[in-house]
Length: 383
Image (tube, rainbow, N blue to C red; front, side, top):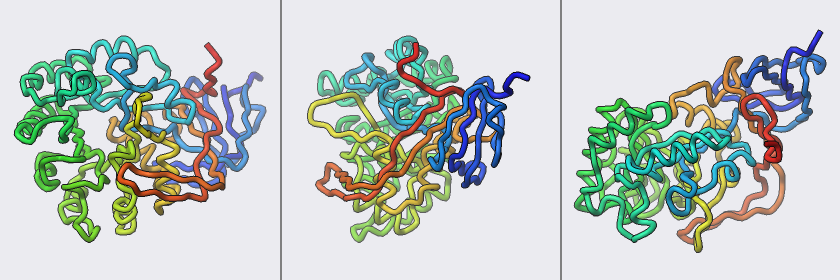
């Protein structure tokens, strides 16, 4: 009898918050899907058996906030060199392109790379191109915000576009255009039945006013920044409106990039029981003068800040998959997409810093062991 499964991972410690699984299990794959997960699956039932003894086995990681329009707009990351080598099998580009240049992003990046990509469309017709090339904020000239064209682009690309992105910051818009930007984004989201992702670091609007525009499932990114109009009071107590927004169903995303993230504020939030819903990077391509941690490094930061391993996995698997709309991602349930990140937690002396001048030292960090993509061991030397 020929083997039943294409691939079998044996002896790992499975962490799958979607199924409330946390323990030693084997997991088998066939035809790109999870076929079986059990305490003991015989080795002879698989063509390829990989021993992952005592390593952490989790669904393929999802980076909900990055910039992957590689060579479409400046300083965008190459997804296949940024994501897959560390166990990130799915990523979301958050507003690199608008309706004018999204078709090129789709044709020349999203449909060609191995990393599974989705996107939030920028409210600006050209995405971040104007600010990165000319120093002109995305919607400083509000003629670049074209509602009908944005709606049409989303409707024509519903399989890949999750919603509309707005940047409330000096690089994104002006104080005068902040409210019109949120009003237009709300209309686009309503007319397409999609989500808003809003950048709130250095926002000219108080958080309470921003929350008024958001509905369940909408995403506040850079939610743990430490500049004006953040989610805490001067005494680092969580604002009532932050709790109320979470109760309403608003998603709080990290989008770290380190300049958009405050280590002390985030520690204070975690100590008050306000963990991020989703942990993401805001990663970009190489750019002079910037420090940008990858997803494993960001996960390691949150480990040191006091989040439990299972909650970190939740925030990088099932929670972002809900923003994407599930699609069989974020879980190791039988029939799910066969994506897995095999990681280890290793001891050492590690340091991390944010752009506000604060730093932490950590005694442990996540390290990559194996990536499984669509039911097969991902190998960058193949193909």
